[in-house]
Image (cartoon, rainbow, N blue to C red; front, side):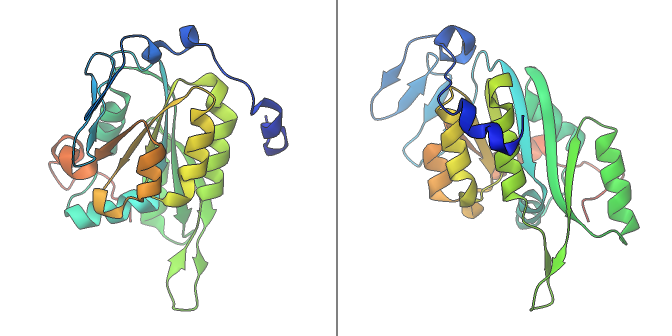
Length: 221
């Protein structure tokens, strides 16, 4: 399926029986509770995701966003631990990692090769130098298109990004019956993205689960 076919299936919805996480009682009050209290929205807007049956899971990681979040937390991400944590024993369809690349950076190339060989589908775009001298590659379109193209094939999307530009894509796949979990650092996460997600996990609350315990292995930069 390509981008021109997206409109062909926008109106497709999977019935509840095809989305296992939708079964169970639903209670709405001062707290929002799904799946008999397995997903709880607290007063401070922090959401804890713990669905009993997430079905097939697809993971979409904004590499640059995660890198800067890790800098804020002063940790190094262990990408093996991260994949295990985000999958949580569910059936993994794909784990995508999106990043800008500097072809002359051998260390980064080694890291991306390691990622490809350890469970990640790596999507790259060459970095573009901005007038201020910094370099950037925006992969929002790639993330959005992949989320929409694959939506008929997964039940839960895990989006590791705080970028509000992805809110429209999250809302679009939600209308196809997909459950969306957003994982990001709260201070770097757009309100619009949190508002359209089914649940939100602050990276600060799980940093002990996903950080490196030593300086061995590859770093992102």
